[in-house]
Image (cartoon, rainbow, N blue to C red):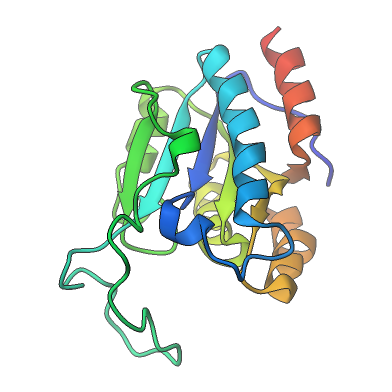
Length: 195
């Protein structure tokens, strides 16, 4: 479903737009830089209207003692990430009014104060963007839907490490959780809603 409505109480939630993830050369179909460029447009518009911008990052203790336990078929991190890998990219940093959330899971709700931060501000809808579409973004979208938020995905402000997984999220999962639209479509609708 194309984006049709944004509530007056809408927040922008940006997932894992941090140095180590944005810099990945495996991002597809969009590069990390393209996603950040569109996320910056969204963030600037939301900030200009006094709407909340949430910067979510994934991070772990230096010894990885807080990594989610359990058996998986995926090898995990495969070493120690470089210094500063979990720092939000410069293009989105430096705005003291932004809400910052650190997660230890795929999704931004479990084990964080994201829901409390949104509810205290009366937020009823979130616009989601970030990396990776099928992991952090999709997990957050699912939880947002389950928490009763209206969900909108910025389709040109998300990317993945797997183009097939990205496409599956956009075509099969997100339509069941909310609406989707381009950055331009969302900005146009946001301006009408707030104007």
